Amino acid sequence: MDTSHLAQHAGAAGSLFASIFVVATLSMRTMIPLRVFAILTNIILIATAIPTHNYATLILHAVLLPVNTYRLHQMLQLVRNVKRSVNSDLSMDWLRPFTTERKCTAGEVLFYKDEKADSMFYIVSGRFRLVESGIELPVGALVGEFGMLSPSNTRTQTLECVETGMVLSVTYDQVEQLYVQNPAFGFYFLRLASARLFQNISTLEQQLAQHTTPQVAEPKPA
Picture (cartoon, rainbow, N blue to C red):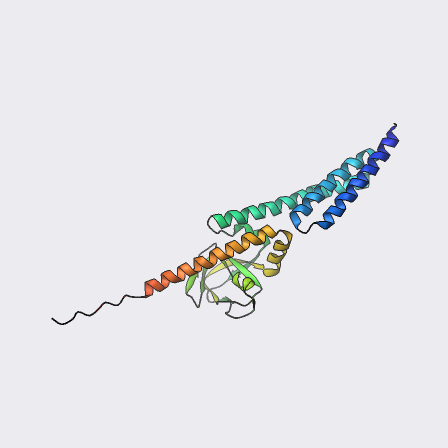
């Protein structure tokens, strides 16, 4: 069998496998398996483009292969970081690549209680306080996520800047996109939000215990 026949068979086999992978890719509902199938498709089309000298296809998929590989790495790393955060110190550093910087001055109110919520904030520097509960949030804290989880999408408290600093904001739409791309991210994010809720409850209980003075019974007359 000469080279031309080999090239024809390689091209036909490549087209068949590519068609199978394209159909499989369209059936994927989440981003990680979609990226995996896209990578396999890139590899097969590159392999079949070489003997057929189809340089346009070769160049296209040689470019798409590292892009799909990098995106797959990003999503896997995101899930690992969120999972690690849930199991350790509740750090939100994994959210930084998806955020926008915002500088705040002392006395500035980032949001008010009961107003419509559309974003959450990660505290980088400065001092911030939840007005109604009196809780002061440390650097590295995430605030505003409960507005996303509440049925009415409204703020549960007012957030005020006490000392000039900076926050990173991320919209709920961006978080929802991350969830659609990878449901595992959504699962760990909900666990993280739940952990923070219980953390806030514990803080409030401690503050309440500190402000509650036990009543001492008056001595009875002898």
